[in-house]
Length: 232
Image (tube, rainbow, N blue to C red; front, side):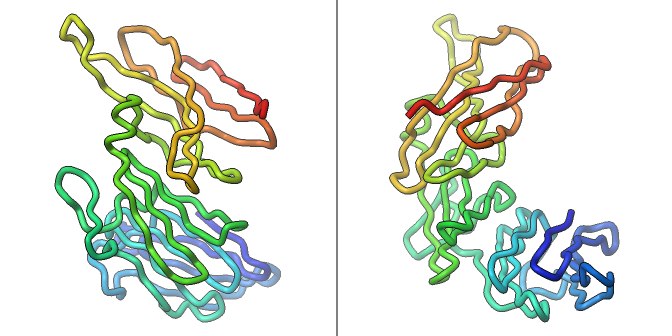
């Protein structure tokens, strides 16, 4: 895994068979600028899920540690971290008070935010103010048979994701509602969804969608590519 800034290449590295290291190297020369180990950070089990570069900072996500940290891009110094949700905010039936699956997050450069959507839960970090917000969308998602299964893809006001929600059929057996969905992160509402016809037996899933211009594409486990075009 690597991420580019204007002059640096950020590389994830392994230490003791765990993804805990980050190296910053000059793009032109390959010289090492700084190197850090996440094991030294104040979070247990911090294994790196992803790296985002925004302005003069590197943002590192970790699902195992349920945390996101901000580093000074020029020195690698740890500047800020997000782990606990705002007071009074909980997610899920276990009333979790920490970030849920930060690996399912994306950088929205135009908005200056990191947005996360996983299962039935949404969260965002405002990179200008450092404010963290989270919302439990279980009620609305379940009423529409939705559950975010893949890391979302961001474009404009929407997070696009593949959904797979298990439901009980009239005969008492379980079925899967497979959909592609557009979640409006500004309004926290579902603006669009598409349900797939699929075989009643065996594994059937829709992979992580891709967005290019007005087109949304996703492949299924049967090898078919599904292509959608924005009409309004």
